[in-house]
Image (cartoon, rainbow, N blue to C red; front, side, top):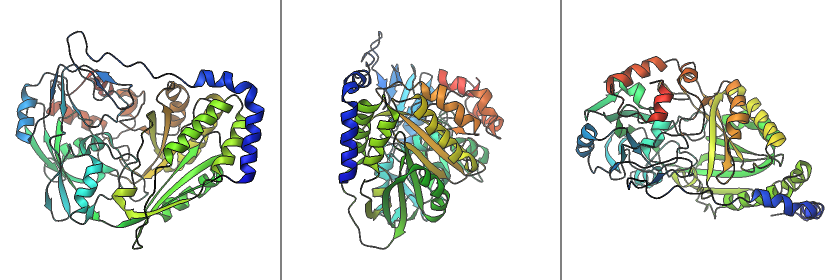
Length: 464
């Protein structure tokens, strides 16, 4: 919904830009990135992640149908052995020229212990929601995208949004780990506690988690609200909104001076359908504004602000698993850091200012969330709550600026990287961020002394 006034502003900006637009567009509507060959010289089939920046040609692929099959496979598989979920990690966690293990046949709810569900870790989060709902239960929280497997989400510290809500692994109360030697270990806070502390966020480096026991909550309806406001106002109000709402996050929209807020709160009100996806259309508008007016930040901001400021608020009421995640058909590459809560907003403002000063090609919104603390050794939220800032780059565009321009800001503000998102940190830097880093490495060596679970990327990550 665009007001008459803002439509006139938009039209005026277009007239001013008409002489330069063709030249600018030619350099900013890039072609599809070239794909690697489908087969390598040995005839091995290509594996590629969702965004296309990671690929490999595994010598062997396996999809065990039972935990016993998985254990037998692990004992004899060609190393490096890497487990794969939905391929939504942007870092080099999965690529291997050895064995690629899919848990797509180990899915569903294996049983219940009170209100805690034992879930096979090949289960996709999008399928787990309705499966739990059949029993009147739900996950406390969900990430922005629900296509990930449970194992992949736990292994990388994937999270949703909510000041009092933990990341996915934070609600795991027990797990079953199949080691590289094929041994099955049960672990929780009492049994094999060190393994439990290490394995909940371990990027598949200790073995393969076949099953996890998860806390669940009553399956309640949530009231979802989406509204736009000025970026500075969103920053000023964020702390209060994190305290007020069950779930709250916002998106800073570079080159518009605007932000989009999203809140979810429990309700007993009747359901209101969510309606069709609007995010994809908004992204396309932002891309076209970038192409048209990227040469002039003032004109681009005027048009972007005019359009976003009159966007109609959205509301929906439904079960949480239907609302908390969003479809993301437009591919991107992403960097996300988790910061001390007191530095989150200052870091965000620096990131937005740096992008607007140096990267006119960026048009994706920046996601801003808050996550509760947990005690997993390599959890980015270990020891204290954290605030996340996630920067996206369109999959056709250069993303090197994430390392050169953005990462130094996030590191300077005390950030820890999301394990599945782009970052440049290696063992020397990571060891200073995690109090239990050496404890983790010791458990890792005990469970996998030959390093069969480590590909080259992970060897550099752990200093092996």
